[in-house]
Amino acid sequence: MPDPSPAFGREATSRPSRASLRTAVVWDVLKDALDRRVEATGKDALDVLDTGGGSGNFAVPVARLGHRVTVVDPSPNALFALGRRAAEAGVADLVSGVQGDVRGLFDVVGREGYDAVLCHGVLEYVDDPAEGVRNAVAALRPGGSLSLLAAGVGGAVLARALAGHFTEARHALTDPAGRWGAGDPVPRRFTAEQLAELADGAGLEVGAVHGVRVFADLVPGVLVDTEPGAAEALLKLEAAAAELPSFHAVATQLHVLGEKRA
Image 1 (spheres, one colour):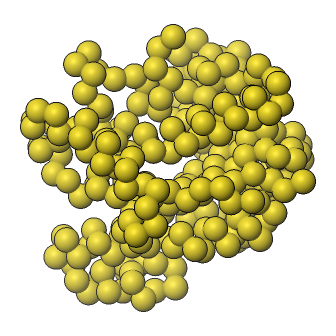
Image 2 (cartoon, helix red, strand yellow; image 1 turned 60 degrees about the vertical axis):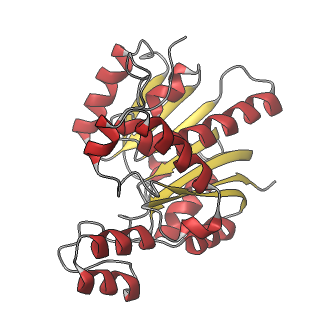
């Protein structure tokens, strides 16, 4: 079976792609959670909901594992691309796209109908992140897993500082929403503690918190692409740092995984 990672496999040289460097940590954690759910339920195929799943960066690889995936996204163009990607991957029968968003989630899907829910890159853009997490958890069956991925404050501060934008870095550090200024395209960022609190308040038993893209966004691309073994070494470094709380504060993204309480 082909590698079902979001990077859609590796190059012929087995060198990790730039995309896989940014998604590998989340994918590994998510796949382990799905495997545990399969073992716990005894089902061969799970029902998975991907809120804000767009064109299927995670939905299609999850379907390639044999699971049924419903993607809810507000963009018709993204859903069209999702259908095309699923067809090209040979999993069109396992992936369905529905236009909607996490705020009105139960206008388009049912409650407690899913073994796993993905909420990736959504909370930054909704008016009420707590409501978004509550809806995601409410869509889960008891014991189901929620994969929550959102932008981290510390990563933005570090990136602006390293780019020489020190005033913007300081603004992001002190701004309640973690924004570096009026031109910031991301409406909101989080700390690991804030994401964990949102998950806990929504009825989730938090099992793991990971820092994502701790180094991948800071290392010059030319180094990764040209230095022999650099991509593989960076991938291993990202995996090693992801679980350490000391690196959560500088990660570009933060990932929380938990299970719905009975």
